[in-house]
Image 1 (tube, rainbow, N blue to C red):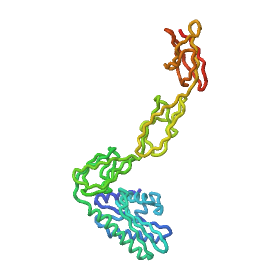
Image 2 (image 1 turned 135 degrees about the horizontal axis):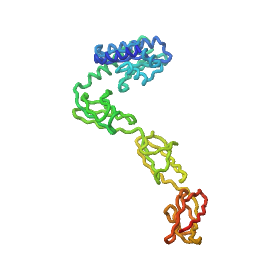
Image 3 (image 1 turned 90 degrees about the horizontal axis):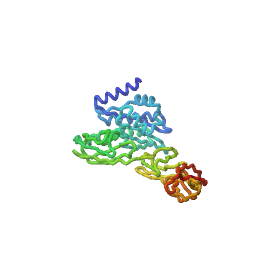
Image 4 (image 1 turned 30 degrees about the vertical axis):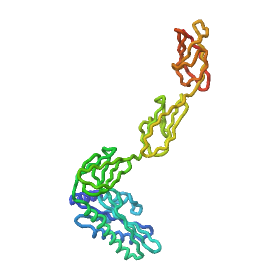
Length: 370
């Protein structure tokens, strides 16, 4: 708890005095002596300190970094780029400088990387190689200093001090849309109008489940930036005819109406006791909007109908199955398995009977007309 209070205190002090913070992480290297790694980290930390104005930038100490790593349950040797950026955010750093080193044919090869913790973007990368440890230490100090001067101080000095009002819109718009200008968050929803530095900037408009929209534009007063975001997902609608038959998607029985799906292979199945099983094998791409209607084939049954009058004499009555004429009695016909009602008509007389048929079998039906 005390450690977290210390971190919060550091963050608060940065806000009050408007200082930016740079975190120099412990260097990593397989098969490299730990003392060499410590010295390289210290040289880089010293170079970064000299390359940054002391009144505007703080350098995070090794002790603070070690404590935060322990609290996160991580070891620096297993910390990847995402972990490094996350670690920088936890300690309130605006930038993270990291280094990895290995040795090949007696030569040390060190790679320095500088990341912006807000956007996660790589601002700069330098490689140093030397067979002498002493010279490697000196070069690490010098290169770390130059990276701070060039990539942070120089970049900030080159930014225009003139502020202009710019409107940002996106499709789709609303809450959950993040707008970044030059890697800095500007809005958390669209449309929005904010004051930003004039000039050429990289603009990023981000929304969950959509591909990032990134463009470099020249921003001036009253400009409107419009972004059309492309989804990373597909949408699918499937209906049946007749309507209301049970559908399953990838083995799950459900309604399939504007259903959001990951790109890839999907299977739709219509399975009903009255119809022959039928399905769709689909391969969807990001941005697809597909709409299908399945027309299943009814299962069949046979029926043989004889109609009788009040004197039990056979008569040539018209025979209807679910209101569809199938012929005159006596009549043999193939009808849908789930047909519900048989009706016969002869002159002004008629008769009705419920049906219960079996697939691939002929049912004999005798019906009286009254």
